[in-house]
Amino acid sequence: MKEEKLKYKFSPPKYKDRLLSYILKYHKQFLITAISGIFFNSAIVLGPIFQGKLLDASVNSPDVGGIKRAGLQLIGVTLSFQIARFFKRYFVRDMANGMSGDMRIGIMESILYMDLNILERQNPGDMMSTTIGDVDIVVEAVRKTITELWDTWVLMAAYWIALMYYDPKITLIASIPIPLVILMTQLMKKTVHSKSREARLATSKSTIQIRRMVSEVNILRLYGREEAEVERLKERLSHQANRNVVVTILKNGLAPIYASLASVGIILVIFLGGNKVIDGNWTIGTFTAYISMFTALAVRTTTAAKVFNIQQGAKASWDRVLGLINNQSQGSIDKAVGLNPNRISVEDLSFKYPTNDEYTIKDISFEASSGMIVGITGSVGSGKSALALALTGLYDYDGKILLDDVDIKDLDYGQRLATISYMGHDPFLFSDSLKNNITWKDNNVERLDKVLNIASLNKDIENFEKGIDTEVGEKGIKVSGGQKQRVALARALYKDANIIILDDPFSAIDINTEAKIMENLRESTGDKITFIFSHRLDAFKYMDMILVLDEGKIVQRGTHNELINTYGIYSKIVDSQQFWGGGAIEKQIGI
Image (tube, rainbow, N blue to C red; front, side, top):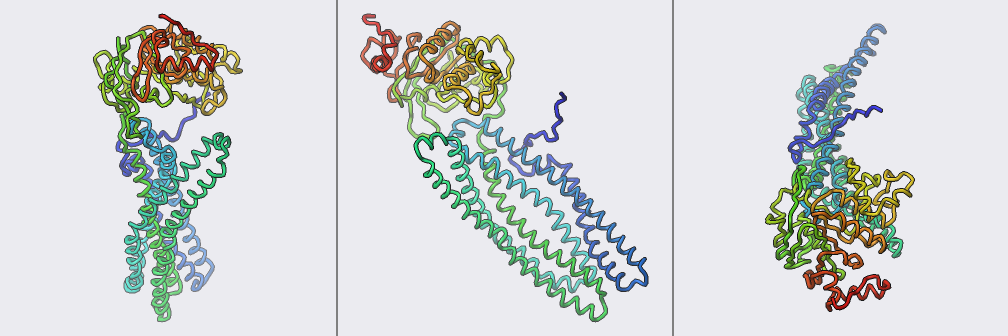
């Protein structure tokens, strides 16, 4: 089956933080829009003129032939500029579609490559609101501005020239209110921008609340929080509605004032032009043509005022878009070959989460050699997950994490990613097949078979109707918690990095499966360095070294046999797990 040829190939321009760059990228569409727009808005003036001629022909023509000729001329002129209008509208919308796609791709690229220390401080709902809502507002403002560049300014110039040709005196007198309308819009500029910004922030808060409710609906039901969260959403939607009402009034509510000012000119035209008809200087057709053109000119004046207000609202949205696009980024990440260190040395390591001010782990030091499996445990809140994140080298930290003699923060970002594989304590599966969740569409069959065996997934896959190609659903909803965890483990191992960090990989897995996975890991470790963070200690008898954390510091270290016979946190955890779990952990005395 032939692959469908895509019309749009979205990619942001080189200078994606400059609005003009998006317009220049679609210069062909802009040029066609400009040519057809100028032609349409110049030729449209002929409509009222030929309409007036038709009216005069209807009154004064001695036969029907004259009326027919005038009618055909009007039809021909109208058809010509309406065709130009079609091309103008089609290509400006085509341009807008491309720009919106490019902006969204630019934002997502920025988010994907954003420094994680910055990304952690962002709110997902707010980013969604900007990527969807604010981009639409900006692109619509650009489209209307370009459209009105021809539909308003060229049209007004064409009408103005035609009106001056008919009668300069009446035109100048009747046009006095027009500059007043434009001046009023300029005076309202700052207010519209400020209120539009407030409205977009209110919309973001509503989006954040909706996203939270949708993603955590099961928790809300279990704890009976549905009504409370709905009330909170009502408050945020009410706040959003109030802010949007203010913006709507500023953008559209002033239109009657603008129209009233412009209508003063129309009254003057009727008075002065009517006198010319009475004096016999103008025919009825001429008067009709003139008043039609002047009315159109006055209407375009109010339209120009609305566009000014739209631009100010869009400026607030563009500021939000820039807030994501201009965030500090790692830049595009090139594929690199990972290091194969003989040892990892951690010296005086301290780390705090990007959203916290206090350090979660402090002054941690240890060393591990290639081929070792290191277990890290401790009570809840002891700093296990913080240490796991710090070891990835993707977040800011104090102290040193040396791979042989090179600090990981001094490595090229791509090389860091190639050296380390990480599995978080809350594994995420994408709405895709089991295979693609593990391999990211890579096709190394031998490596896939190996990691499936290590993660003890082969029997599970055999029971699935579509085997390895089974769809797991959004967030892995179609597989069990244990299967989800093992798929994430297989993904971490498939990367084939030389430093493997597994944060709580066995919490949803039964003890027998856990033991089997640990045996498989032990056999396949090779010269890799593996860190396993867990509060369950059944697998820790397989570890070469164990670190025990408490309040962000290492309080015990050693092997399982050493620590289990030493009074401390480790032996207390073992005792409690033996009590609740029936003595699954062997305790050796006198070792």
